[in-house]
Length: 252
Ligand SMILES: Nc1ncnc2c1ncn2[C@@H]1O[C@H](COP(=O)(O)OP(=O)(O)OP(=O)(O)O)[C@@H](O)[C@H]1O
Ligand SMILES: [Mg+2]
Image (cartoon, rainbow, N blue to C red; front, top):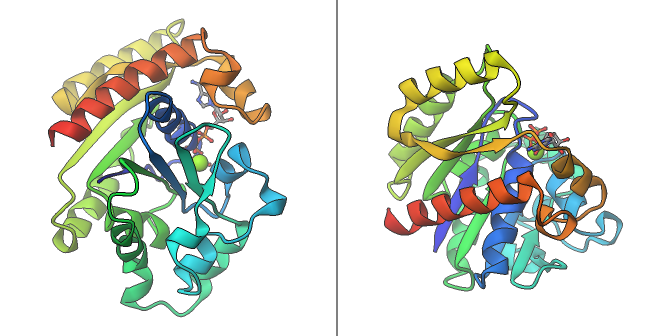
């Protein structure tokens, strides 16, 4: 089972949107996909299920009061499941932590066996407990980069955190990047995109996600981009990225 973690400590760079869009795209093609929300903001959860009616969420899993299996709920998309988060997840970071708090996610994912083809983890904009526990569980890490002036700030810290996680997770085989929120009308976006291609080389996916208002609207409508606007550039870009990422997951 491939475990993909989408991470970047910068906020608002499309982590959550990407988790949902890639997962939905794969589920629509027949894969069984589990999304795990380990962000106390619970944006992914709110985008896709009725937040008020959640039974078990990831707070209970991190507190070792429930299994991951018990937290899994179906979504409106066949084959697509979610282990949701509540905002109370933020309190886990205040609890006394042991090594076990960092590794509980990995143990719980391992217990799922082959129930899912792919697991996709949404992380908060930080390199704290939740992101580190996701790195300790992941086989692959995907990093969204928005081509702005400061976009390379922090990529070194992110890499260092991944290098350290690898010492305890030999299964973490690969890290890749993709560009997002690209605005082709601005010269600065194009120039920075060129610089990123030079710097990241083949670890940068060919697909770039363009800025597209339908993506933002789909969130308010609580739908995936494929249900909300299947012919939008957002849906087109995410379909292309889903293909590239799937090939990467299956080849490494
Ligand atoms: N391709 C796009 N075009 C336009 N808006 C987008 C696109 N992708 C995402 N957005 C919007 O950008 C905002 C941030 O996206 P998202 O929540 O996915 O980022 P994030 O990295 O998960 O944020 P956080 O760090 O807070 O978790 C959202 O309002 C989303 O609707
Ligand atoms: Mg998010």
